[in-house]
Image 1 (tube, one colour):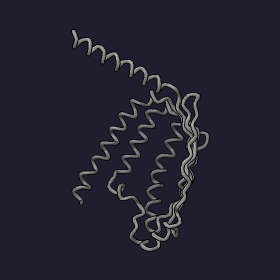
Image 2: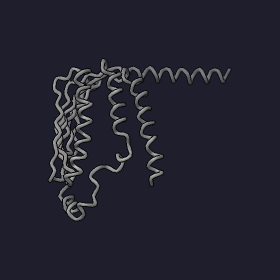
Image 3: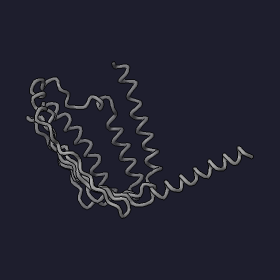
Image 4: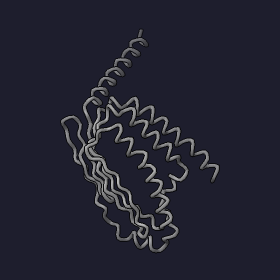
Length: 205
């Protein structure tokens, strides 16, 4: 009897916690973000509550150019962590997630202006070509599946510079409880996709 009472008490606590989590995830959550060259500002909405986001300004950067000037050819401009990943598969998985939640996720604004500069003309062109291919997949998908008031993606390259500039505006909202199932399924698939590349990287090393 004691064991049954303990089990019943634990089950009751779990039910109460699940109910509380469901209540917390029911209100609509919205986020509006403006990111420009390392500085992030925006607003998070949870029901009727609002919080302002204000990232640290991009300060303390003057010493950086001196380091870049010392060894410009040795510094990797493309993150080494991305080299072994299946970026195409990851983009497709992200689009599959958006396709599953297109009737539950509201996107009001998505604007990106990116001027890529990798410090080397050939590398800039290579990365810019890859990003353009991704944008060519994402933009038509968003137009077909979402009603976005302000949608704009502009990519360009600075083939003589070494400082990438960007200006990103994102505004969207959803009820988290309606996204949980799709996020769990596609998150697991994305995790497996990333894990599959790790053994190949280990063998290469």
